[in-house]
Image 1 (spheres, rainbow, N blue to C red):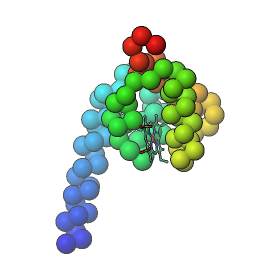
Image 2: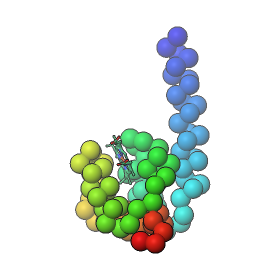
Image 3: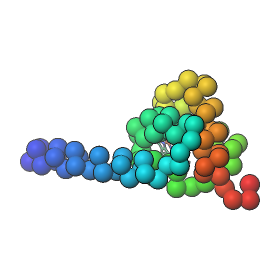
Image 4: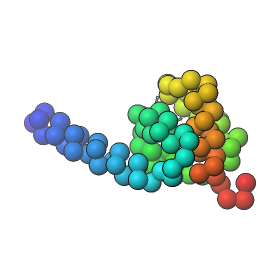
Length: 91
Ligand code: HEC
């Protein structure tokens, strides 16, 4: 029984990360977002809502509080990348 569960999770993981990678626009910070923001939840969960730059800063700060690991400079880059590529229209 345990083996079946193990195989199931091995099959799911690569599929979801390939999907997330394809969706991200190119740009400085992309690799960081992939590395830092996909360890607890899928990137599609993280990026389905768009935010203004101050809102992204709040989100990223709160993820840092939950345990996301990057330096301050890296978090800055992540916020800029998200604000540029996943900006809320009209903001
Ligand atoms: C240490 C684990 C962890 C990491 C790393 C992480 N997150 Fe999260 N994130 C969570 C958890 C847990 C939730 C669910 C929070 C909830 O239900 O309130 C979440 C939820 C979210 C949400 C939905 C927020 C909301 O308020 O509805 C967004 C957006 C998000 N994360 C973005 C990011 C981004 C961007 C990064 C990279 C900087 C990141 N996350 C890295 C743990 C993490």
